[in-house]
Image (cartoon, rainbow, N blue to C red; front, top):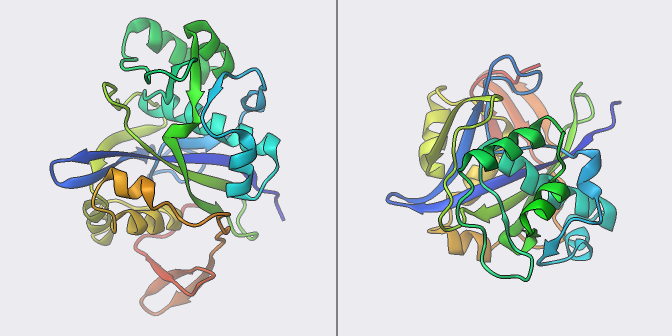
Length: 263
């Protein structure tokens, strides 16, 4: 059995004209994991995400460790990975003044893009980027949302913590990642409707968390009504039936897979 890699994913939210919207990426088909699938920004923990020198404003790692049922070192890594991956994959930076002041309002200039690229190539760490800008990671902008673990029989396994965050005022999500061929803001209901037609394939964690988001009227409610803590890890089993393949969650919830899971 392969040990799962630690990962962080962020449900980036905004209030749009049709209601609550979430930022979604369609991963390129050539990706080694979940190619062609629609997902949220996120990825694996980097070894430098645990840098204790990272400037930090908001709930401390101890608080996040309680929420996710892990140790403080891993909690720090996960929060940093969430912020780093969101910037890498959407151009949105969850950071602000080191004294706890305003969130940085605009990160679209060429200088910011150069630093985003340096993060992607690992020439620059998140701690170094924030220090260079005189900024601090804003953990108060994040909420713990879900915890999913890839089943033991799968070849590629991830232990993924899901966070929710509002799009900061003044910032814009941009299609900047080479790991996706499409980026869009959609209501959860619209995304799930496209899933049902086969137009937008997704993995079970994305399907289930979109279903959770669909019950919220706006961003404020989604952040205020985050699930109880500590979050319980969800690891589905799979069942083949005449009407297709189903993911079965520990609580008995059944998710029909519209298209086959990627290998």
